[in-house]
Image 1 (tube, rainbow, N blue to C red):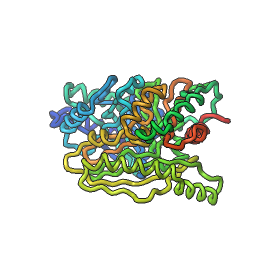
Image 2: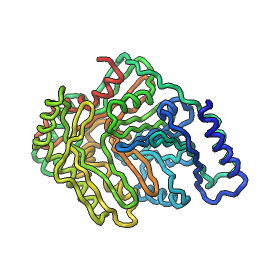
Image 3: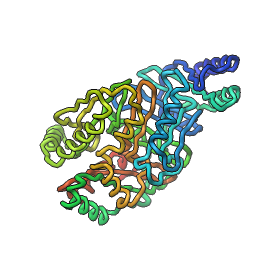
Image 4: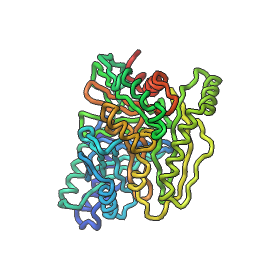
Length: 451
């Protein structure tokens, strides 16, 4: 386990042994100790217990690495949101501890087949969690005494601690040889789809559809998802960064600029992120491009549509709602977006599942009106999005946070699946939108492959 952890984990082992002498008062118990910080991604990469989870919120100095599961909710087949809400509410009532978090995600479209072991929805209460705040670290161990023999559960936690590996430096990123690439839909089909969406008759009833593409890249070697995520994080620090690996075969990682929502008690923060251009080669050009984006009628119309939709769906759930009148510019490594902040004071009793149902999938990844756009995507796009453009994050009693999983990759043995989408509205040009997809993949491709 390495010297660093021995002292801190031995404290936890002591606490677990004490716990085995007294009957548990609650169904879910969390034990914690403080420790000095260490790089969480290199710790996580060294671990051999699954699932492996990494989470880093966009605007804060906290990141989390977690392994194992003492409770998981996995829905391979269609799942009704009301059933999910009920399960989560029941689960929440099993403990009074404020710090319990369930990490996981929901697929983009929960009515269609999804990726193996990710399913339509998959949430985990981890066995061991490391949460870093600045230069402080908390090591947490979660125990689930419901439907388990308490001694066995404590043994399971002790055994998970015994298997913790000490962190080792991440394998340095090396460029892979590209063995093959395929795009789904391919360009000719993409052109057809964009032309269908921009036809006046279609556009009158469905003003926006977000079309996306699955780019499959075969490479010469296996890829360490955590190394890729660490490099990506370095290039887009002002994004959400997260990863879910439920088995050695597949890892889903994302470096997403987009927040679905952050809820603190009854206060809700969300945003309209839509409208894109590239970054400039120098500050002057960058500023000119940003200004052109702000002045561009198509892009500001797209952002305004998204803002209006979010305000409309949140109004019945809120006592108060306010949104930026004017969009601002949100800059990433290769591209810049239009962004409006939206804040709401929720009505008492509004649950996270009501928020997920209202907000997900957003018009920034689905379209408007939602059902018509989703139907078009379901029938025409030609591949299953899985968790791409889904909602990933965590539930907690006092504070829950979800990101929209755009700029994401599904990593499999010797293969990386990349995804990118573009909002198609009246006047969209197929070639320009295809180029936008390329721009959105530029950062992650540059990490993986030499062009």
